[in-house]
Length: 441
Image (cartoon, rainbow, N blue to C red):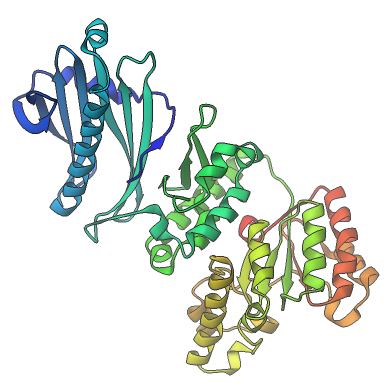
């Protein structure tokens, strides 16, 4: 794990170490220079099954140390933690070697290592390690590292391993952050290069990114926003997180009483280099997010447009590979239509199209079972494919839109692009928030 410098408030659990000095003594092999450290150690049960807490404290004339870390029931997990802890201790002593003993005799150096354990899903724990070091230089240096324990598989997972394409995901998720975080130079550094997304951890409802900046310690995105960027195996493992987040959002919406009218703009059958580009330009002008149900056969030709959709915060849905009626083909053919499209989108933009809209809205129990999620249909059909008339499109939206409406359009028609600006202006004047389908509920 690569160390990331970050200024954080020291965790309250640090004081716990001082109370444990009277524990049984254990001499370890860590070398402080001339002699081995004499540790006071203690092991305690935690509230999590299969996870204990190990504490080590050492007090010497020139330095004080307190180390606090989890111990799992699986030795393979513990070996990596012990290696990490020893590396941090060694780094502290290497730094001490550069400081005169005279300076340390006035104020002893200190080193603390603490951790925060976050249940991240079934069989998963995210661990945020924090070190606080003082070596007589006038200020403390605080750093943090994050890791994910897959207890069921008995191994550690790096954050980047979770993602279909961590580099594409990093660019898109940076753009999804609030403006303050998005504009920060330090945040940009965390979302760039080979270490992008390496210092994040998972909570039940959020994915949390840590940063090297005094004003910004952490930034959170809802789990549902990050979920489509995960590889399929991890989406399946984290499915319960999505269910829990959905329930929490429904509870908040019911109890708050602050209801906001929402409408989802959706576009089918693209991408198209001319009309889709024009539609994206209008959406960007008004800072509106939409959902594009793409055809895999067209994604294959225009992957850069799908990548742009994702980078600008739009949701990508699966509209099959070749626009076939899924109720009239075999199970294997349905799976192929959806699977090939999902693969094309993942290659183009590093995100999986979770939402599915069957062509023609044609579905049945068997198709729904294959899809695995409720199909996304619509409540207002603009008939843009039929009229090719911007005013007719606008009039239907004005007449039929209500709170919670899903509006159907097609981004393969120039007339749809021509109608879009008037549609958006009207809806915003009526007090509607224009959102993606996954944000509608």
